[in-house]
Image 1 (spheres, rainbow, N blue to C red):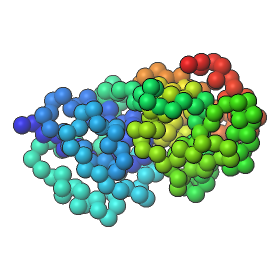
Image 2: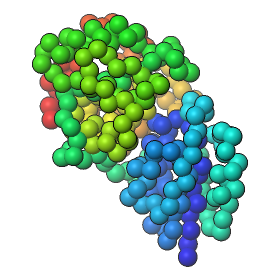
Image 3: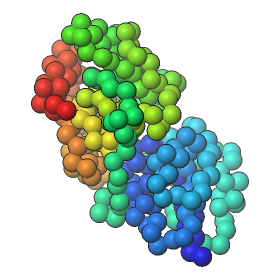
Image 4: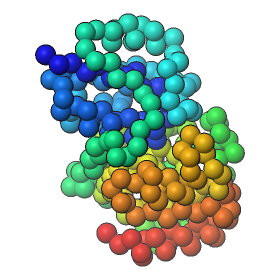
Length: 262
């Protein structure tokens, strides 16, 4: 029996989406058994091809593109995975080396007009956050236009603006369904924005104009081409980097809702 033992994956959610799960999916037909070791709660990403899943907590090491160093139980996990078979470990891979599927079921999802990822200032990159007062203003304006708004992300890493439905912390499979059913996802560059791409959901993202050596590209190139395997519509704001004016964000949201009609 041919057996693949993959992982452990330790790193940012975006890199797991665009440089790991698709890679394992492409390799999977060559194996009879496929055991994946990745973060707890992420089983959904591998459910179409995995035959076994070893989950663990990787709190505290999320802010990296990938690493073989992890939490206290990391060595125990590695020991568990050291079994007969081919061990697959993380590395840099291109889209061409991967097989992607569209996540989320529109029919199962709860429809909204806009999902917001109000990234908080209490993470490892506080400079990438947007003030909660700005989010409250944006959501208030959108609610006045009779739009349905929900907040996504982890409860320890994102705010829920006033008036938004609180979907923070929901299971990943439900998030993908709801994301597939929404019209637009909005927020600063983050993992949920990359999930939107794989759900086929238009997204408006703001970021800086820096060149990232791990990507060998800017974030604009990442969202528009390098990490957009399904050709999902997206709009990148980088003129104001991580601090776009409220008026610009509102204007762009309305523009995207009109341009990317679903």
